[in-house]
Length: 210
Image (tube, rainbow, N blue to C red):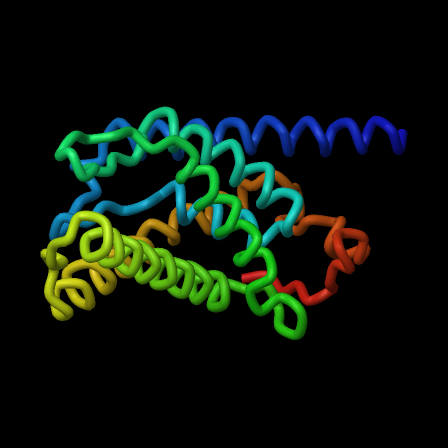
């Protein structure tokens, strides 16, 4: 009986994660223009990895982060213009991004606070700002030190058109993802029992339903 329950829970987790991951990836790459505002796109993949990691822990987050990162690299490969003016595909950035996000999100305010909705949204907000800031800093350095030219965006454009717009879009994208994960997610109770049992890298018992 116990083995059957374990098998059932594992099958549910695998099936739900597979469906949601494929759904998120397909929506992201198939309809980007439908979720675009002010030249910024709702990053469902990024938000999905953030929330899985925050709610369900490091192991789940790393697995989903790796899968989504690989899909991101294959289906939406970043392009960098080199010193010769040619566009070059850069594989691996999506995977590195998602792994980094999963590690940070799974440890975001989880040691002494409860994993609840408000902190989940704050996680998405902070991770989005860090991601955009890092991207602009890298682009700035690349333009100045590699290409030898000034950065094309002003401070106001970076702050308002890029960072602010992106975190608002990502917070909006997070709302349906939270509902899916918490109420129709990989765990029947909406809680990863491994975290309750304190068996995942120390775990925690700081759970609170929405």
